[in-house]
Length: 192
Image 1 (cartoon, rainbow, N blue to C red):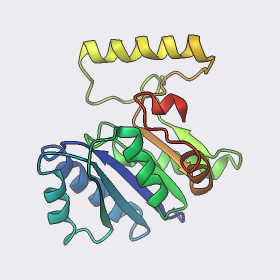
Image 2: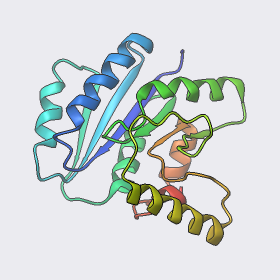
Image 3: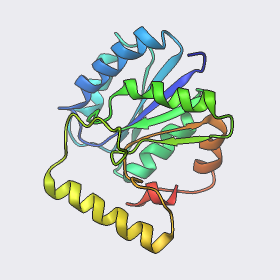
Image 4: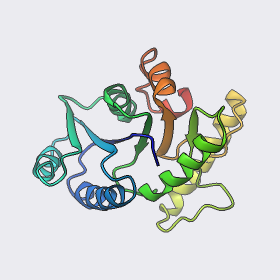
């Protein structure tokens, strides 16, 4: 992999899950991407120890940066802030719970390398080859499917899973998308 990768993780009250995610992601990235990556955690006004746990890890993870938002503005605002601060050729945002493992970025790079016309790659839990090791609750999965169905009917966007929290884009696409729009609402994924 020759592209510098920026991994953006929006976090709100994630002191319990985030350290494990950062350890796992950092270990995988250092062995597969070496020193050609950065991890940006954007704290979205957490009122727990999220920032403290990230600050503690920075001494052992020099590629780790913390950006703090003073008040909670929503996941879209946190993602936007991280995407605009990222320096890599590829900007990836992923959820703090690591529900999609960082190793899936290899598939992202494959798409970028084989399809010169792709600027955005979106993971999908609905894809037939998806390997979901940790399912969401029955209610959450069905609420997501219902939302996606309603979104597809109302917008005409034919994407099976707009809400998956693992999306990558080229630096140019990231700046084009996030510099012009706020994208900080509940459905920022659909707006994007």
